[in-house]
Length: 344
Ligand code: MG
Image: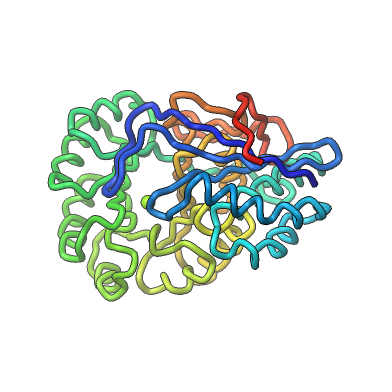
């Protein structure tokens, strides 16, 4: 295979704020793998919380170049297993390579990835649309802009959380999910859950800081709403740790290292009776199209990343009003539409 690496700055439609951070432009890298005239693409965004920068991604992926370029792609999992020892500490880089390997695999086999996995696409969960933290007026305006979506994920962790949800509820009958991104205590979570359940919230995502396991066990017992792990569930081994502390897990491809470990995590979660959601970063249609291949396996999905962008860089899976549509193309269906800056 041949490896190329591209940098793009993704402009966001709105400043995106969560409990700990705020961004207007999302830097991202695209891995391109070429074999037999076909090109596959994968993506990893930069991320302050996880300490991932353009430089660290370029260094990590560049260090694997000799392995990748001497490798002939068969099953993507074989490349993942070969690279894991090199990139164990850099899952975002591993994710971009693993997604590209899957896209390329499908293109070489001339089949969508989900079909190569023998999955059926007749009953797919709807994606939520995420409303970042802002003034209540701006959060209402963001909801109105996407008023025809069936599910909204509301980012909380402010001093006016319940007011925000009450005000948004006055706008729509849609399903709500809440993500506090580690911003609440156990007492707050248990008491907020009572109010939020009345306000039509379906579940809570990561209310407590990632390492507060004992408090989380209490929340798991006393919360009237189901609780999903996000920051507490990053890698394959974390699924077992979440059993008994959460009702479900939110798997993200960049956190675990791509589609190969995500599929293993889904299997592990199912065996333990945990519900399964897959989430996205603010990534382009490259990363979103990879996530979409997992849809038939999921209870819930947050794949609005490309919808949050003012300008996309690729064509692939589309998400409109929460409905995912696969393109009539093999692999993950990704074609780049913009020229990036070449890093490798
Ligand atoms: Mg989250």
